[in-house]
Amino acid sequence: MVICVPVSYIGIKKCMYFVPLPNILNWILIYFASKSLYFYVCRVLLGFSGGTLVVCFPVFIAEVSDNSVRGTLGSFFMMTLCSGITVGFVLVYCLSYHVLPCVVVFLPILYLCLIIPLPEPPQDLLKRGYEEKAEKSFCFYKNLSKDPAQQAENKAEFDILRNKVLASGITEKITSADFFNKVSGKAFGLIAVLLLSNQMSGSFAIFNYSSTIFEQLGSRMEPNLCGIFLGVVQIFGLISAVLLVDRVGRRLLLIPSLAGMGLAELGVGLLKSFASQDFLHNNGWIALTLMGIVSFTASAGIVALTFVIIVELLPFKIRAPGISISMCGLSLSVFIALITYPVLINDYGVHVTMFVSASFCLLGLIVLGIFLPETRGKSITQ
Image 1 (cartoon, one colour):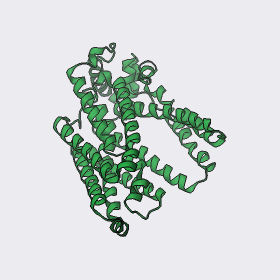
Image 2 (cartoon, rainbow, N blue to C red):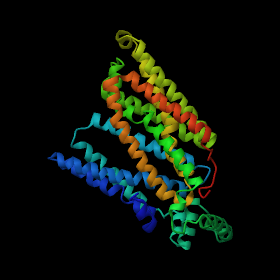
Image 3 (cartoon, rainbow, N blue to C red):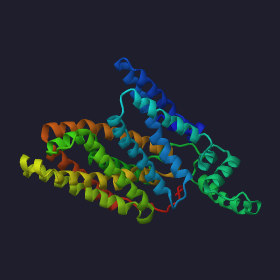
Image 4 (spheres, rainbow, N blue to C red):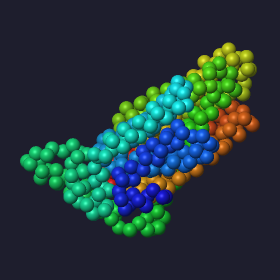
């Protein structure tokens, strides 16, 4: 909830400056670290940077993108996020400790340079009463012609947006009634199921403990290569989501994603339950294929679309604080998954872990399949 306060007063773009600055300091500290305390400070800095990123970026993307490409750009955000994690695995595998921060520190510096010339989103400016700046921002992000003959048409198009934004009550003070009503309650309920399905289905935790899982499945692959393999497959899944989300809609990607992921995890669980160690060792390609299907189907649906669906489900007036609350829920579900999965894998085995994950896929499949509305093509103010 912390980040939604400055967003309301200083604007979303200024808050996005808090993404690169702690990140740059983090890599400097890692390079000069001589005590474990340095790494604790680094984790705090990365937490602040990452928390700002996951709250601000989905809102920024939704507000500056056209309805026809909002899902594509939202999925592209997740694709770059997951691609960065995969690149991180590769860099750690290839570079020495002190070379790594010297290379990566240039990325937040580049981000800072690229974001400076961008104007703030028009909805954000309208909320704070800057109509003239909002109109210029609207024309910039819509790539509207500056030809004087087009000014009247541009003005009319901006007025439509302004009227919709102001009619949503965004300039009014947010009260508890905005959160505790039927529309908001349904949105938060669906988001809770979405986040629970996202994390407890294993989309993140399985990736983190891939080396242990592959080891129990008799894989001969080197542990770091297991993570790289799943990361590469995940990127292909995310590319599929980017290409399809605004063509087929959110539901037609999400529901098959949960079904495919659940069936593949069920297959891994059954394989581990009934196959001998010799069979697993000699036929490692079976487990590798099933885990690849888990990674692909997860990233093509539940991973790629979570942020997109959260932004589109929340009422416009409470979108910024609503996303902040949702990200707190996501962080909590990530924490629960990361402390639950090691216990499941080490104490009960991979088969039990996969059965539990598949059951959460089934939960999401039923609830979201019945109640989740299709939001493709809807205006961001709806």
